[in-house]
Image (cartoon, rainbow, N blue to C red; front, side, top):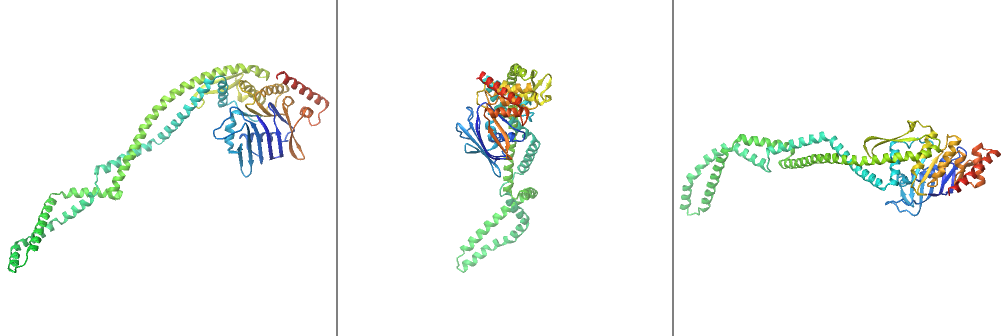
Length: 518
C-alpha cells in the first residue's frame, strides 16, 4: 500500500504532500487541473511512467511477498525520483534503475487507462489464466516454472544451432581449406635444416669435376715423398713434421675421393626437385620452421572444427529430445488452462450481468511452441473479438476479469491505478463500475481518476485537484467538501440544491453500503 506522496516542481504543482488510506482513493477536479499529472508522478516512482517532477518521493508498506537479493528493504519502503539533467531513482537510499523498479513492483501494481486498449492480447490473457490457476493450484505454478526454465535453455540451444547453421557453409569451407593446407605441407614432409644441407650438396656437385681434376694433378706429390725424405736424412734434419703433413694430406685426399664417390651416386635431378619444393615452402611461409608451425596451427584448427561438427550432431539430438519433453509439459499446461478458462467464464457471468455485459468465451487454440507454451488465447463476446468492443464495454470487461482473478489475494498486497476508467458510460453502467471498483478496493488499494459521481461517492479518500492562483493544488476532502465536489461533478461549477441533495444521497448510500460489507 502507498502511504505517502511528497513532490516538488511537477509542472503546475510547486510542492505537494499527501497521505493515502487503504481502499479506494479517488482524484476529482476540473479538466486540466492536474489529476493525470499527479497519478503519473506516482507511477513514475514505480518505474511505469516517465518522471517529470524535480523531486518525487513515495512511501510504501512493503508487501509480504516482495523480496530482492540486490536491494535491502525496510518494512516501509521509500522510493525517490530526482530529476536534474537526468532522472535518478533511489530505493531506500540505494540507487536503482527505472527498469529495476518496474520489474520489482510488477507483481503488485496494475495500471488501466481509458486510453489504453491493451489487456486482451493472447500474452495478457495467458498470463491472466496462469496467475489465476497458480493462486489455486501450487502444482501448476511449479509446472510453469519448470517449463519456462527448460524452454529458456531450449531457446538458447536453438539460437546456438541457428548460429552454427548460418555459418555452416563457411565452416565447411574452412575445414576443406585446412585439410588442403595440411596435406600440401605434409606431402613435402620438410625437415629442419634439410634445405641448407641440400644446397651444400648442390654446390659440391657443381664442383665435382673440377675437384677430381685438381686431385689428379696434385696426386704427383706422393711420388716425390721418398726424395724429400732422402733430403732430410742427408741434411740430418728432423723430418717428422713432413711425414705428419703427408699423412694428413693422404687422409684428406682419401676423404675427398670418398665424397666424390658418394656424390657420383647422388641423383642430381632429385636434389634439384627437392630444393624446388622446399624453396616454394620458404617463399610462402618464410622458412621451413614457419611452414611446420603453420601446419601445426592448421591441424589444431581442423580438430576444433571437426569437434564443432560432432557438437552439432549432439545439439540436434538434444533439441529433438527436449522438444518432445517440452511438448508434453506444454500439453499439461494447456489442459490446466482450458479448465481454468471454463471456470473463469462461469465466475464471470454474475459480474458481467451486473456490468450490463453479455457472457464471454475464453478461446484457446494450438500454436507453435513458445515461452508461454503452445496456446494462443482470445476473448470473444457474442461471437465478436474484444477488439470490436466499445470503449465502455472494453473497460467494464477488464474490471470484471480483474474482479474474478483477484480471488485468493490478500488485502493490501497490490495497487491498481485507474485513469478515467468510468468515462463514456451511461448512468447505470457508471453505478455498476463504481460498485465493482469498490469491491476490488477490499483487496487492492485503488487510485482512480473519475468524472463520475458514483465512483467519487464510494471513495475511502477523496482528493480534489484544482487550480489556485495559476498553480495546481490537491487537498483531501472532508465530508462537506466531498458533497460539494460530487454536486459539481453532477451539475457543473455552480451546483444547485437538487445536485447537492443528490450528492448527499449518494454519500449516504455509499456509507451504508460500506457498513454492510464491513
